Length: 467
Image (cartoon, rainbow, N blue to C red; front, side, top):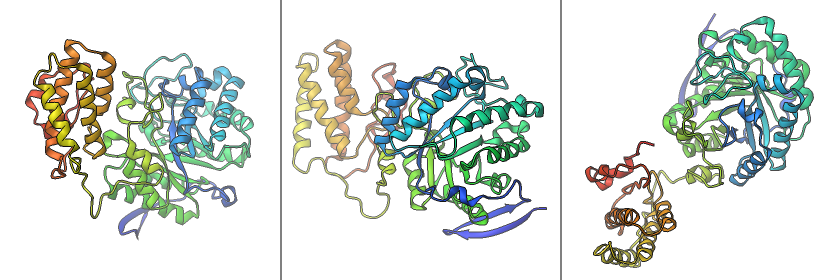
């Protein structure tokens, strides 16, 4: 029997389906002392790995130690990391040793860990059964839907869980939670809530470390909220109001069952789910969050295209999204009230740089190449520091590349092209009269430059080359 409960929270109307309870009930004492609302987390796949099979099979302790240091420097305090049954099955104690190393390394940087034990998501792989020697460039489920839906396999899953909790017993420094099953909804027609509940109960019988299940939608929390110790949901919302509605839905279940809650997956460039805004939303409403993901993948041809839509830190420790890093530290972009529009020419420097650029361009084929790079560098400093920042590739990135590449016919051509674009933009914004993302510089490599001839300067920030 289903009834509807209508509750208003934070001025957002939420209609909650209330279904029959599932599970064994709460164990509040397990979460005493845990600051779930203070979670500032990331999902972790090493930058040089593709999925949770090669992450563990080809585990690289040096990479892990470096990237945990990055995470701490950015300001994270929590890691969600996917395990895969097939690697444990092949390696047994060696797999446990790798997991211990990750948890210990994260803990040494002040980062708590939540391992994800089972996972129903499988992107770009069809219905293949995950294998230890897999080299496929897609995301693999664990243990695989055919195993999950075969009740005779479940004792093997229990052996796996026993090995995990014996390897990381309750009280292990840095172990905060177990995520029993990621997004059961991802199994589609094969989804098996009975499997999920069996292993929630099994975990509770063999460990007192709190457990959760990261559901793909807050609308499905009725399936697990009564059974888990901590409520967790995922939200790749397209706008602030949708995100707030999802948060309030989860909050209703948390209030109903007197349990803490948090969002264990959020943040996707290609879903209008901007990192800085989703972080701001959750922090303003005192809710823990975990972004997908820490690292920008080095894989350029992976089926799940993570590199192009997720991640904030590159393998070398530089970042893609400064606003996201600021938000993690509780500093948000001003989006209301009086904004002080920067005026790069208030001291006359912009006019001087423009004059130098005009002079250099008057004879760009013979004028000193290094001086040209210096002029373009000044333009980059003026434009980027006044928030007229490129939307694709920073102009300062191009300047450094040109300087390192040295003088040649092609680099001179690119230098002149960028200088002309920069001057046009600088003229528009030098006195703070234009609120414009006018300069979207694209990489000099593999770019069809004919596109620039057909795009107005104020449209260039929307131009993204084919990679």
